[in-house]
Image (cartoon, rainbow, N blue to C red; front, side, top):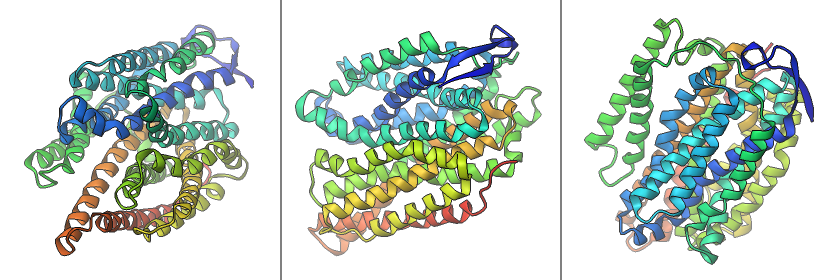
Length: 476
């Protein structure tokens, strides 16, 4: 799996150099898997951690909210960092941050230290995700990117999907600290392989980091993610904190966008939005991540609250769909390379819509085999859509816009995921409360009703994605 690329004058040599794409992908994707696994793995332990550290549910939720908030703030900055620092510098920084955060979290004696560890972990992932995409689009020609992005899509799905299952098994046999300790060998593997095999493949430019742009980006994305993350808490969406945070975030983003258009060397080149296929892909990615990450939260909640299943049992029921998607992801990527985007993406959006049609009919007596089968259909659909949309979106841009396009798409994905979780969990709670006002002492039925309502909303969004997919085409 070796390949010749031109490293470019800014990475040490104008001569072509032999690189090993297999070990490079292994180093980047294993580290990415650990980061995405950590994104959801701790969710299943929040109840235990709340008791252990003597904190309330609102405070302990910051272990998840803080992770998303850090990603939303740092991913946009990574776009310009990839133009200022070498590939190896960015990779090693990512690994060392993830390692430091993991060790700190695993050995945390108090809640504050655990939260700090989570934030540092997220900072490592914020560098890894855009860097991995940038390397893929540099070392693979356009006709092979679908396969490579298919493998990355596998990691982006498998990490969050397997997190609760593996964490549940760990909690049944070991202490919560081992959710972090078990990832250390994988991070060391990535560190060694990356140090040996990863060359500097990015083109360095003389760019300066504009402090005002960074500040506006941080306030903008951070304000929106923070606002929607606390919107589902007891004060609700009408809370002054929520409203003010979102308004300030939106104003900062508008000012950020205006500033980027007036700068000679912008932090994020928004000219990427002048390409229609890029804009189409961004909309589809937003809907996909909004639905996917909220589904990975709502579905286990439905099984535990409406069907009274244990957390680990819920994870096992969802495991077949996740594993099958892992097996088929590289195949889906090759089909994308061979037949083009619409042949893969449109059937994928249709499968997702079918999955939500079935989800919306779930009640308190739904058979477990039906949940497992529907989840398989859903994960096949998401697998077909996720990586293929990302690949086609970035393929629509000229090479010089890759860092900006990657930073934009990754930021939008993380922000949409955070919004999706906050909005859908809030709607689930509101529907449950409304149901219990009419029917007392029926928590299981209320949970089933709330889940059905949320999945119906996701179905509408899935149908929108299906319609959008009909306009998807291969960039010329």
